[in-house]
Structure formats: C-alpha cells, structure tokens
Length: 410
Image (tube, rainbow, N blue to C red; front, side, top):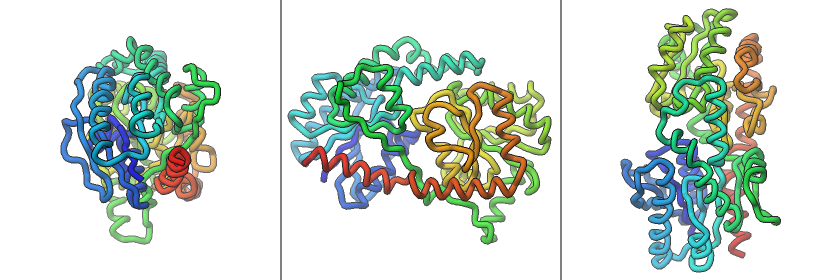
C-alpha cells in the first residue's frame, strides 16, 4: 500500500504533529508499506527512515496563511507523485494544511480516498489563548502566529469545516477533539469520525533502571545539576514557552508548593520567547535558584530528565490531545494535569492526579498531594508505564490506521 501523508510539520520541525507523523510513518513502513511525506521546505535534512520518502514544497512565510500556500504546493506535488507511483491513500494532518472543496473533490476523484487526522481546532487554539489572557499569563498576544489566530481563526476554521465534510474518514486524536468539532462545525449527518489517541516512543521514553550503575550515575548528575538531593523532589514541566501552556500559573502555584516543601525545585523545558519573562516572574515570586528553564535540550537528555523527575506538571489551557503526559507516563513518572479537555482521557488518580484549570490552589494542592509519598510515586509510575504500553503506542496507531485505510480501499 502506498500512503501519502501531508503534514506541515515533520522532523526536524518536531512539535506534536511532526513527532506523531514521523513515528506513525516508521511504524507503517516497518509493516511493509510505502510511505511518502509531503512537508514544508526550509529545514535541515529529515532523519532517514527505511521505507519512508520525504518530499518538500515551498510555502509563504505568513502566519496562518502558510496553511493555504503549503496546501496548494503539496496538492501539486501529490498529483505529480501519483502519476509516477500510484497512491492508495492520502492522509492529511489538519489543521495545518488548508484545502478547499475543489481540492478535496479533485483528490478523491483523480488520486485516492482521503483520511484527515484532526490534531485540534483553530477555534479551540484561539479559546486557549483567551483563557491564558483570563488567567493573566504573560505576553499572550506577543507571538505573531497567536496574534493572527486571534483575528483570523474563523477564516481558517472554514477550511476545517470543508475537511470534515469532504474527507472520506476523519480521525480525531481524542474524544474531546471529536466533541469539539461536533460542537463548533457543521459536520455531515453521517459523519465518519474515528478516535485514535496518538502514542509515544516507548523506546526513547522508558523507566529509570535503578539496578544499573550508569543509569543511577546519570540520575545523580541530573539531580545535582538542579540542586535536588535524592530525598528532595524535582518537578518537571515541558512544552513550548508560549502563554497557552500555562507556565505563568505554574510558577504562582509552585511558590505555594515551596512554602510546604522548601527543598523542591522546578525545571521547565521548552523553546519560545517567554524565557526571560518567566525568569523575571520567578524572581519576583522569590523562586530564584529554585526554577530552571532549559530552552534547548537534546531528545536523549530530555528523556533522561523525565526518568529523573519525581513528578511532571502539565498546566496547558488547550490541547487536541497532549503528548507530554504520555511521555512522562512512559518514563514511569507520575503526572498531574488539567481536569479538562482530552487530558482526563489519559490521566487519572492511578497514574497521577488532576487539578482545576487556572486555579493556583488546586494546582499546588495536587502537586503536594502527589509528593507526600515516594512509594506512591513509584507505584503510580509503574501503572503509568503499563497503561502506555497497553493503549498508547505507535504500533497500535499503525494497526488502527491500517484498518481504516484498508476499509476505504476495499
């Protein structure tokens, strides 16, 4: 089977979408299928995967509008590819490719059936920004893409509406995303929409091997780097340094945590323009020396940090699914996150805890509750790893998507 995926993100543009497309492609190729990725140009060479070809196309570097220009160039490349190597399935990764009705009809009529993965909605993203503003996060509208989204989300939501009406099958990455589309958009009466939660790389994210001398030396080195003893606690939060991820409210909550657990420190890992603002906020809250922000970290270093952390905190205001909690759980590290949207579909009190969005007391109380018992943290970590292996792997994703592809072809 020849599957062509159109994804605006692909390594070395990682992000959540880039990561899932990369790993899904690898899993499908390992089962003997030919996979072609059509993505944006302008980055370094993509990592090589056997059975996966990566083609790049131009795009206009305009916030939001790049989804249209990329979509047009990708459609042209798709037609050229089909003439040389017939395509069986076209898999769109929305919302960062915006096709109009004509393009959908031409693809289905001249090339192949269309599966559209719904990674989240533009209107949901915009709501997340307004929530960040409501809870007084720093620089909510400082990011050009976010600012454009505020005023143009309705325009690009029209292309999402076209996608759900003219795709052969849609696949949402959570029940919350599916419900979001049902509530906001005019889906057809017999809308074919499956739910497949994305998995994570369980070979990269794995538990700390406590009987391995080298692993424990690395663990000790990481804890020393962030001034945390074996008896103290290290909190970790991961995500782009943008307002929607909720790092401002996390710092306020962490200040309350420090009142009860003074030896606990916090590491935030992510790229973005808020690092200096967040460090200033931490200093103002009296957290200087207790908060560390890493704006660049290799994947193996991040994976080691997940294994070392005692607890991962994820306070995001909007997610289509949210992969950070799963990366933590795969590393056998408990996670506390927002009791909202898709996150409770992955996290419950068996693997961590849930708190109220934007509520400083709820967040701090949830963190302190988990830190009460080292044994409970270990037990929840084991349960989290088991849950990921059972339900959230790319091998499972590949098999689930293959069922959809084969049904469409037949």
